[in-house]
Image 1: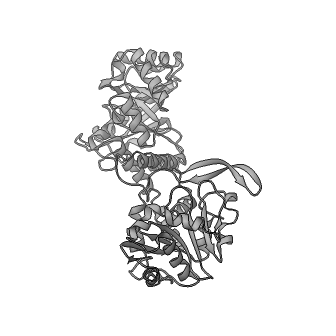
Image 2 (image 1 turned 90 degrees about the horizontal axis):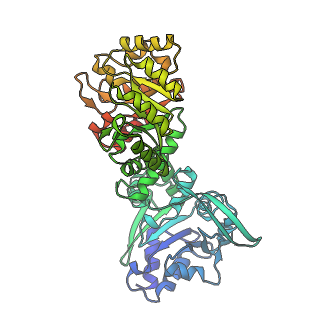
Image 3 (image 1 turned 90 degrees about the vertical axis):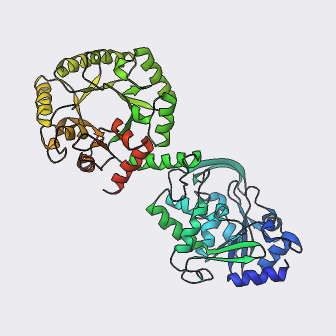
Length: 490
C-alpha cells in the first residue's frame, strides 16, 4: 500500500477536507504499507486538511498508528488517566480541553461527545465495534446500572488531584452485534455514511475492512436501542460471567423501583447452597425462601444443618426471608423452634386446623408467621383466616394462586375477592392448569399477571416469591425472565 492508495480509499469512503475523525485502527490489517504507520497518519491528515482534525484514543495499548499521533509534535493530548485521546488539527485543543474535569469519562464535556457535537466521524480501520470507544458514551448517557465508578490520582495543570468518574465501562460487552443495528438503521441525514441503506458505510483499503459513521448518528442509534433494551450490548452466552453479572445488575435496578421485594424458593434456586447462591446472583436476586435443601423438606432437617446453610447464604450475600413448611405436619411446630435458634425471623406454613396454635407459638418465639392455602378453596381459607383474626392473633397470608386453581377457582376473579386480600403479605408466583398440571408464569389459569398488577396498584409492600412449581418450566433464570417480561408488559 502507498500513501496515494490510502488517500484514494479514504476519499472514496467519503472523508474530505475539514472533517473530524476519531480513528481506531490496526496497521497490520492493511497489509504491507510503504512507510508504515507514519504513512497512514499522513494520509488521514492530507485528506482532512488544515481545517480538519484527526483524533485517536491513547489509553491502554492501542497500536502503532495511535502512538504516531500521540507522539507527533503537533498533537494535543487530553488529560485523563482512564480515557485520554490525542488530536492533531484545527479543533484539537477544543476537543481535548479539560477532559479530566468531566463528571464521566466518555459522556458530556469529553472529547467523545465534542466530536459528535462538531459533526465528526468514527472510523474503524481494520477493527470492529469492540474497539469503538464512543459506544461507552452511549452507555454513560443511558446511565446503565451495570456501569461502575472509577477513581484515580493523577497530575493536572491544577496540580495532583484524586477524582472519581461515574458510569465507567466495565468488562465484556457484545459491541460486535451493533454492526447490524447500524446497517439496518434509517439512512443518515447527510455526510458520507448511509450509502448502503444505514448510518454506517463500509469499504476496503488494502486488506482492511473500514467502517465510517457519523459520531452523533452512532450515539443516537445506540441510545435508541438502549432505551428499548438496556441489555442491548450484553451477549446471550450463559457462560459469559461478565454479561451474566451485568444482566443481574440490570434486573436489580429494574426491581429497585418496586414497592415489593422479590425472592425465590430454595428448591427453584438449586439443590445445594453454593448452587443457590450462584443462581440467585445470576438472576439479580439475594432473597430466598428456604423450602428444600439437598432435596429434603426443610421441616425434616436438623437445626444445625439449617443454621449452617443460613450462615453460608449470608456469607454469599444472600438472605433467607423465611423457612417454609411444605405440608401440614406435626413437625411444623419444631420448625418454629428451628427458626428461632437459627435467627430466622419468619416462617411460612400451610393454613389448617392447627394454625391458631402455631400462630400463638410463633408469637411466643418472637417470629412472624404467614399461612398459605393448600388443598382448600378460598371460602375455607377465608373462614380459617377470619377465625385467626377473631382470636386477635398476629399473622399474614401467603396467596398461592396455583393452589386455588387446583380447587377449581379463578384466583383473581374469585379467590382474591373473598375476605383474604387485606391479609396478604406474600404472593406465591406459580402457575397451573385446572387439571393440576404446572405451567409457566402467565401461561396457566392462575391469573398471575392480574394478581401482580392489582397488588402493584396498591403499592404492595410484601414479598413476591418465585415458587418451586416454576421448575417445571425451566430454571430460576427462566422464571426471572418471564416475571420481568410480565412487568415490562404492564
